[in-house]
Length: 163
Image (cartoon, rainbow, N blue to C red):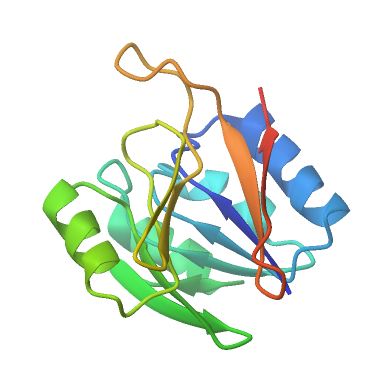
């Protein structure tokens, strides 16, 4: 199964549109947004031909966003756990480095997905892969926005530039 991962889209409709197009082209079965969608209208393009999951980012309006996502997907709140094809994922926005590290070091997950820093990260520690797809460029993190696709069968991870 292919899983799309994105974070920190911050109402950038062009990036969101390109992400949905990429996820559709890659034939993903599900997409996980690691927070900072921001306005509820920015979530609605993810109502596509895949399952959608989202966690709350520090810039998200929780109640309206939760209601919007619930219309077509699953809103996980502050953090969530997902399993696809026997592969375990923790999903968290990433506002606390200590929590991200604890999730990785717990050994309970195959992948820890997060955003927040806007810096693309792919790191493996003791069998757990920490992934941050990056986000829109900001002065502290000029990296570009990407969509990441994880293949749960092969373990392949591909990043696709969106800007």
